[in-house]
Amino acid sequence: MAIPYEFGYEKPATLEDALQLLDNKDMIARLLAGGTDLANEIKQGFRVPELLIDIKGLDALEKIETVGNRLHIGALVTFDMIRRSRLIRDNAYILYEAAGLVASSGIRNRATMVGNICSAVACMDSAAPLLVHDAVIHCLSKEGAREVPVQKWFVDNRKTLIRENEMVTHVSLSLPEIKHAGAYQKMMRYAGEDLAQANVGVLLFADGTCHVAFGSVGPVPKRSPKLEAHLKAKETGAESIAEAKEMIDSIIKPITDVRASKEYRMHMTKVMFERAMTAAVERLKKPKLIGG
Figure (cartoon, rainbow, N blue to C red):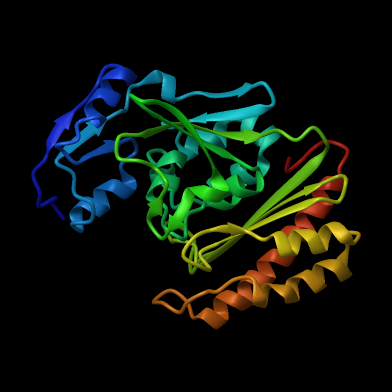
């Protein structure tokens, strides 16, 4: 399907040029990175821009690096780059695991993690890993830099706290100082380019602390302080995981749509939570850090 709309196109040579283009209050501008979500949105007439700003080629946005005790992932880092990064595999295994379940290899070669969280569809794969790692979204405009905790980033389905004149330059994740292990589970109808009907991410620490996040079972992905407090209060074993599993009824609010009923989403979220917790517990036992 061809795009039935006309708009301007600019490919800035520097980050400063891109911010200058974004600062034009008389024109609706959209940023083009991977474009896998954006192209479909424009075809459907959703948030059609007057100006398309192509930021591909801005090398400063392609970095994966550690800065102090945080892992930085640039706005142009694709899911394929995440899968090929030893730094992410060794320090944020849950994100590495989730990236491998995004659509197909063709999509992973183009789609960016930052584009995923800026599109903010409820079924995105990036959110749960970022939530359990206490990620921070780093925004930039001509007015200066701004940091938004990922827990506050998602406002509603397809809505975030980003401002019209801002761009996300990178996302940073905390690097825990103690041993930890993560696991990600995604429910799909079939292998390939299917969206998540539900997803679960957990991050378990050696001191018994556990972070739990859910996606595609409400308008926004979210952490669960209730489950985390329960798991922290008890030794993480089969009994406490089973108790936590039954608490999920009061925590998520899935809907029925063309891909799954709310009852099936609820049931499978419990199953995936149990699988993710069991995997994280086993990974934490290994001498070499796996899943951290």
